[in-house]
Amino acid sequence: MLNNAHPGIDTVIPLYYDDPVFKDGSDAMRGDDQHTGAMFSYLSSEQRVPADHRLRPIRRMTDDALRRMSAQLGRLYAATGRPSVPPEQLLRVLLLQVLYSVRSERMLMEQLEYNLLFRWFVGLSMDDAVWVPAVFTKNRDRLLAGEVAIAQVAALPPGHKTVGGDKGFDQRAFVDAVRATGATPHVAAKTRYSAVDSRTTRHSGYAVSQRVRKRIEEIFGWMKPVGLLRKLRHRGVERVNWIFVSTAAAYNLVRMRTLAARSA
Image (cartoon, rainbow, N blue to C red):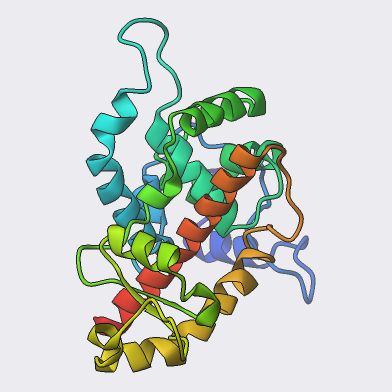
């Protein structure tokens, strides 16, 4: 009786591996496709994003700029009342919309709902609620009214800056405006009545600017298909200008990331 109730190991092993339900060609060790949602996750979004992901340097530059802009952003909000959407998160979301060519705010909020990479970049945890498109748009317009542009996020680091251009920009008003920003106008000089003189043209950097100024067309070539400026999605001069500057700033961040990688 005992031998029949408790078969020995020599009997159990053949029964396990020679089960008649496993026929020739079957995947005996294949895992089950079970759709069971886990209640807890032990990896943060920071751990899931690769260390060499292309968004990481852009996130670092953006965070540094947002810390410098904190006081300016704080002046846009009242001291009392219901807390609003953090402006830092709004600006990060707008950058993502340009970088990933998201056509509308509704699609952007949909991506933010389930896209782990987007949540990490914006600063949302897995459990944080995503804003409805109307709330997002209203808060975005608040930044527009406060003249807070993403261009400030993509501000060039301290250093000597030059602005190249063809002879059409060799005008006194334009040259003076460029110099007022702290940059040096490297526009192509006219034969007569030029607004730039030998104090500018004698430097070797001036010749370099004349060779590379054609790259401005590359910027528009990126902004139209990637930044979706081929067909405008907004109305009003101020709003369109804000979107244009924001798209140019996103390109600036991408370019700064590329230059930093080359110099590393």
